[in-house]
Image (cartoon, rainbow, N blue to C red):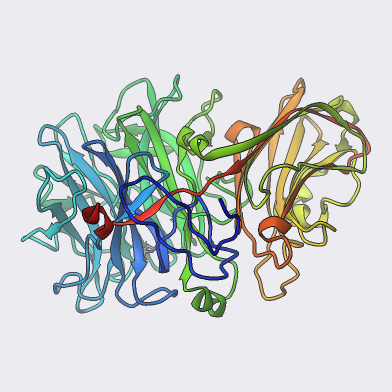
Length: 561
Ligand code: DQQ
């Protein structure tokens, strides 16, 4: 198989291949992207009759956000290889004349029928909520969607701006049989999530008290509300409410373009969600991903009893570049999400199906990295790779001191640049690196002690990711506690030509970066592991694989075979 982006792979999805346009070093091999043009939010992911469905916000006319967004639709048997279908929902009526914006699917139990709730931008440019249903629910591909005669089923309530009322979540059913759904909103500077209830899914009434509110944040977009098991990594259906679950409310703050989540208690009887903590606007707030990741949405995959999260990964190049490339926007590799043992944080890990794309493998075991050393991981395609490394840590008591109150992790990540020497770290990976390393993205850890504990910085620094100047190379990073007895720390990175998704400490911290190297392309891309701390670290085990192309096919070709 060719490594160049000029050649598409062969595949067996019963469909012809999509030919990657010429000279596209940044088009990905295994991350989801549309054949062309603009994509943003993931919409209504679901599993139905043996098929995974993925809808997304799409401008079919250009590689920029559009006036009249549509719902594009793709289907898959494994969440990795995809068939692109015709658009599912397009603007057509007074209630969605100016665009069909984000929304979610709910599978109605008993009827086993999916229903989509989506935001329509109506003829007056007000935001309203609409229902779409499959024309033929026995078609596992759910090719055609019809709009409900009662649309719009929700219009902006009082205390909500008419142009900031959007993104219905998946609905859940209370013990009283009523359906509930949350919608993102804004009133002045206050961000809100409003709750609606319905007995029949068509007639909805708003609760006067907001489900969630945050001062001085601006609009809450794409709320996602779901339960997580306390004692299991398995997911549960969105309607589950009992002693064995906690609840998560995820908010996408437009002003920050970042996804935050709040764990808390949900009691259906009074309709209230009580988050453990408030939004502070500081680095204490929990984010799903500390890099480029927005408007995420989860669903319960009952085929494998897991909750899966999708997130939009936007571009960091210019609009002009996007127009030239002919496309913009990626989706993350779907991630399984669950509650960690402390009950205070979510864990995320790429779905197991991604491992079917692993190809050539190399492994390093028990190799000591003394301070200032760098080791090439050769023998795989460094431009498309999956690499997992477990580092053995030196004694933590030697760690540097950190005055925590004075630190903004993102600033520190950029200042504590990977090539500067520390004590325990920086150590990690240099991905999409040129041979002379003038270009590289450093994903690294550095460990400190504070007055009462040890902490670790995890950073993804793309400041040297490209010789090109016209890119957003903002460094991303965060700080997290580590156990004083901790002996190892793990890092996994999924590298795919212009994206690096990194998972620290088995999925406790995620950082996604977009990078556009000018040298480290195809066969000229290299992968290194490094240690710039004065203390040695040992590669307890490193496994790296070349990654094959995922298969992306067009719907019409299915009929030809
Ligand atoms: N994108 C959609 C909105 C949503 C925003 C429009 C989030 O529904 O609030 O494409 O990226």
